[in-house]
Image 1 (cartoon, rainbow, N blue to C red):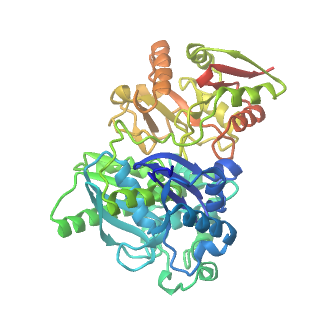
Image 2: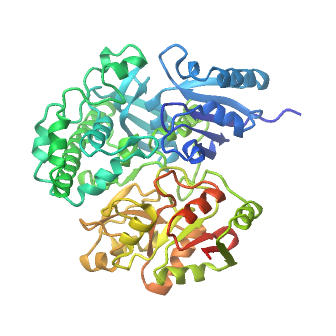
Length: 559
């Protein structure tokens, strides 16, 4: 008896953020990112081979990929796997479809949100957009979502490219990575910005005619031209990176000041852009939307997104999906097909769209790793005992449930600590993460207590927004998660979104009177751990005190 074809697959096949996702009856049930398995951040690779090695496509009705205007596109790089995919679909009766880059971003943002209608903005370093009917590279698009449909409103000028500009600054001013194997370190620059003077250089950035711009997209005719003419992976033509790099070499203080000026100038430019978008959309639709959805890599700038409520108070709610960057295109393209094209009704995700769509592992798999690792001891321990360890200044790594998707660990693959200790930030940065001293850590906070600690209780289940502590005394109680400017990038946790993690933080709150814990991703300069073996490897090579496989109450320490 043939299987009912009730699943749709999406693949993200670009040069970075390679992934696939599976929707069953419109509900994402799996999202896998290649970097989690290769252990190389933002690695390129064959998304189709990755898919075929791990999934049975016999009940798949469609495989969605991104539009590529160049004949053959990514298929020329991996002809064998694409031939196998075509053969598989011919045998099963499945169909292959293509969806535009920004259309997929917009669909991922809106159809993952709880909103019936919303303004949608996509902002990134560039992708092929079919919103205008013409497939060309663009970086900013505007849509409106209503019910199970999204409508393209406008595509903004190609020259405006905040995503690429930030990557180029990260590489050419600060000497940091923007790709494999370490990954894009724009987030490090954002961390630096909180330590600097935002006024010193903001005007100089804003007055440069090439600020956040990229010249010459219309000149490109072939993918190879991007390399030849200074496109997606090269320096921004004309911008004087050398001048800024020389300043940055003067001192760490100057690096911080430059980063702060870049961040402040970006915020000013983005506020102006979104103001124009709101006015333009109102003129086109004669409707003022009170909800906003954002997607694209620029949405990862949580300092900027945290200020949107302040800048645009008429937005009652703002939503950013857990995977707003290109890996999320694998979720958005099948969502667009299922809802907009096939006219299926919206899916009710309840409290929030779950980010926990990665691998899940059983006790046998975990114990196999534990029993085959020398130099460790383990015992059964309750969550209350682990809370006690945190209050004793121990650093604990958490592993359980399906892995969370995206750049930020959300409790299932996390390293946690007690935020009340003055030096806990230094301990985790130096002994575990092996990164710069100024890098901040996020608080995972009980949603019901968020309004008591922060000046604006913003739902932030995926760490998408930076908020300011309500008072300095509150900030001083949790120095481990308070950044230098009195802010924190919050993860708000509800019973519905992650019952175990909510219960764990509640136990910490009961013991300490503080409804939050320090949370950082379970990794050390590599992708977030995926498997029980990845967890053991990271635990073993760092100075993490304990590893807790919480599904089975297995607590590991070094002997």
